[in-house]
Image 1 (tube, rainbow, N blue to C red):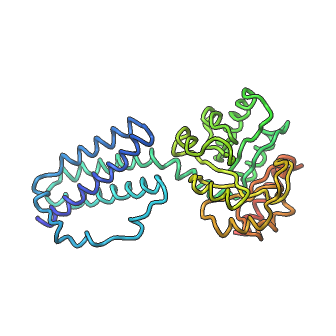
Image 2 (cartoon, rainbow, N blue to C red):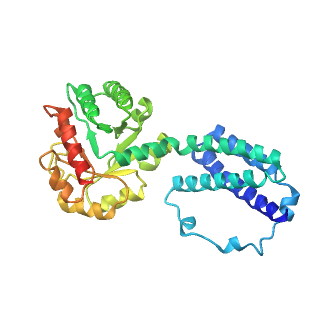
Length: 339
């Protein structure tokens, strides 16, 4: 049984270590007392099964596994990478414990099985929503940024019916009570169609209406503070108009970026067009989702795609379209044909 005990010993350590990594983020990153307590309770329960016989079977000096590593073990892109890796580590260790303890520790096996289910629940609470949002963002080829319009809700719904799945509410010229009312309606509308809803600039309004995130400019609210206020699930994007601004956005660890304006547009008065050169630069540089933006419509979209764009954000071409539904379908068909 010594070999089995070595396996149980190693995997009890592995599971508890992984849980501690997750617990620290729940405590200091999320400041979530409930998740922190759950992680701590599971660690203590695992510790109660760590018998002296298992520890005495340990032989680190002759363990061939200590010299084996993988490149992915030494790199983590962000906190979510750390959480994902350690959740996987815990789940793998628990499965090993559950199987090998069946040999002569059936009560332990049954207990470990229940712990494994509880870890799945913690995983859903930690990264389930964010992963779904990121997947939806990645699949959203067309991004509608709104502008003031007397028929805004009807226009947005028409686009949603045609397959639009990403909307940003942008209106800098009305008072906060009106802005809140419209944002609330748009958020409910987008979520009824299973679409992501973001708010331009205003972190407070995004929080108040339950938006999926925010879009911020280079001189807007600091990204790090927005992330802390909105939580780890939030989608945060940032505008960029040059390689220098793109580098800043990437250092800010945003989820996506806007690239433009590709063409001169009244939406960004006084802002010179970045042109196709910047679009091509972004296509070579970026691995996160990015959206070419600025004066793009059904007539010039093919040229934007040719420059390297796979996703685009539009304003007037949908908000002012005579048929938002048909225009959405046209834009989506062009984008899908290019992928």
